Image 1 (cartoon, one colour):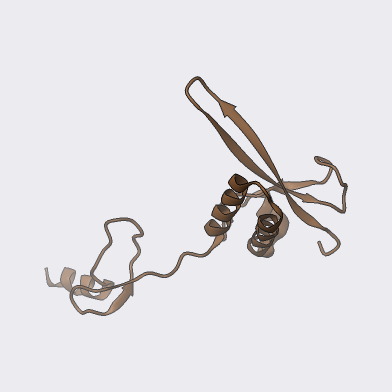
Image 2 (cartoon, rainbow, N blue to C red):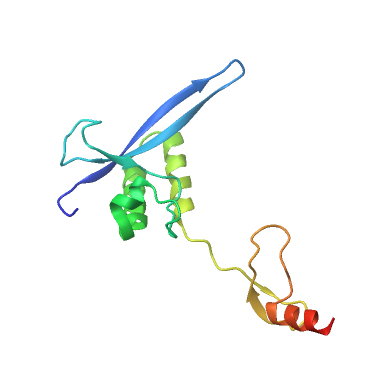
Length: 140
């Protein structure tokens, strides 16, 4: 893979129906050493998110392996610098933001006041740590 020169090629597909129109951006990863023209130099589509646990590996993650996250970030950063269209720049920035790891959120237990990481990421967070929860369930 060292002798390959990767770049993003961004396509805009316009959809229309009776009420409104919208566009969809597709990000293709191309190898400029294979050929200068698309689709001969096509490698894979850039997925919206890079699945690190490997449950449903995309063609992109199969091709780039462990370096898929850093490759995606490098390609998107390079495309952000060279792109002129503001709508495409906004989509590139959004995708870069999706690739950033989620910060670890710790909350304070209502009972013992220790900080712990909750498992739920939604609105209804469990605000009692697992130790206090275990002690409470053993008392019943």
